[in-house]
Image (cartoon, rainbow, N blue to C red; front, side, top):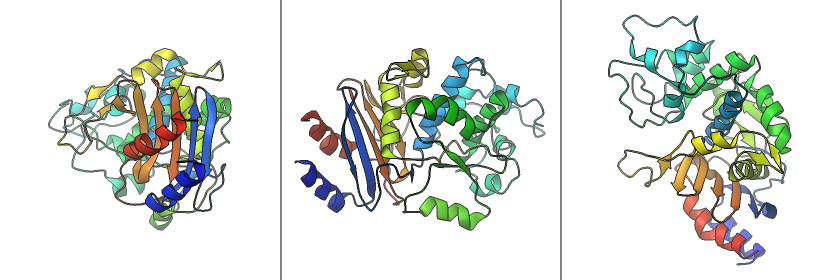
Length: 327
């Protein structure tokens, strides 16, 4: 297919895609927009946010602000009062959170209880732990990851957005992000379900601590740049942004114990590992940063909210990569 044919194919077969951008051999080779979006418009990229936060954690580790991701979580919250009878939380580390192997009380994400609280970090800590101890089992979670940006706030004395703007977005040439706070459940829902272009914003709690599990709004071009950073082991256009050692640690694959829901993918530190040399940031509705170190290709893809679209890895591999390889 040529570009026009690919554009028509995407409009027909994947109608909620709004932007695609791709690099090959460190050169921007492809970009396209759909559904009235422009190249620099931002879209809520859902759980791709998690993978961006992983890079921010790495930067904080590089700067010595976080001693180690094997540090106990509670060492960063000395004023947090552990609930009576709770012991497991004492041994939970940052690594447990980032590898999705932290234990939580109850089932599912406690959205309502966290999001109506005044302190989302401490409300999330209330759900961490439990009677079963640390079982080292994969449990994908979103809202309680707020502990991670709570740690970033503690060690940097900056809002997540300010820290990201200064140490990640600015060096990558990504437009400065702004804090967005929903005053009520209706605004929260409207933000999630929105299909129109938005500014570069990041959903945050009442303390301006950005949500680490979702809520970041980027363009596909922004995401492709982040992919380039990962592809080039922490550098972008020759400038070191995060250490090579962090990128390697972030993408070490670990097998997920599941019944096939995750399609045989492995997991690193808030990054999905597709196969050796290929990793991805994956968000609901088919938002993806795809990084193939073997083919030296990165792809950023944004899409507005559409339920039941878990990822677009197969779509990228079957349609976008073959097109890019011919350019």
